[in-house]
Length: 418
Image (cartoon, rainbow, N blue to C red):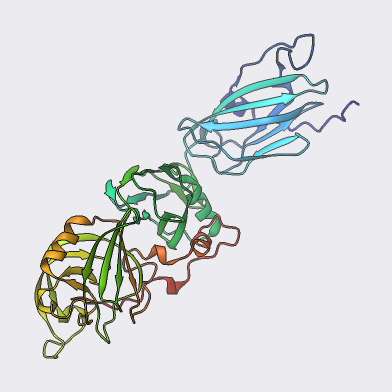
């Protein structure tokens, strides 16, 4: 049955046609339509992209491709010089395709269109065009963290933005452009901590001996009315063994697991009443051979009976507010039997030296059976793993029911030390 001719969409200007640059057509051939040489599709496809400065395509407008006459579109791909594909939507009847993701500014695009006429003959057309410079001036740069290197399997990836991104639509553009590829492959998701910071993690910890590559495709992309993506330096991380240290505050014992096997059990002391150690999963933030710990730093007056001023060695930090696992020779008589610290996990000097030499940034420290509050997800270190996967994914702008992070997800700091 002959199709009813569709309305022909008129291309905007002659200058635009020159900018788009028609290319690659071929003559038709007799015989079976699937074996035929592709027919000339140039007369069956219209491109509509409003022009900007200098006759180039306006990057703030969508790309619109329409099938004319009795033909229909069967496939459309648009890719820029950096290899970034443009997402689009093809009508069920093949009459129209339009872009659904923003175009990059000052970029060269190649568009490949496949068509089919009423007799089933296939046609192909390739066009190129350039987008102009944006009318917006704001730029969003991205800084990935931590610095390149080897980490434990609990290390989240961090993306810090140079400007706030508040709307869900703009956040979705950012997320789609921030790429994390792991080998071995693992499913993961971004979570918005606030308007200027995102964290990325898998459902479970990273695989052991993995390679994680992070990059941004935001450069030149329109994010909002006055904001476009800037450059970002890519990042490469690797992981080591799966090292998890579990502190049982009630049993006064630290058990260290490597790839599921116990490699050491250490008698410890944790926070005494009023200074209870936080429960939950924490990530080693760094290691300091020497730290001077003073009671005033956590609000204890110098003349208080709780005041202290101590040189501390072999300290592994797990919160920014001052919670460490460290050598505490002054409390060795209580280690393994009582909790007497101001929130840190203390152990003998020899055990602390072993622990210091064994762990690395990104390794997991989990505290159980303490009277303290649970480690907050954000703001005082990496408490990311204290959110289950459903809640973690809800913090993504790409989740079906994504909501903005709640203010109480930021840490309410209660400094601890010693």
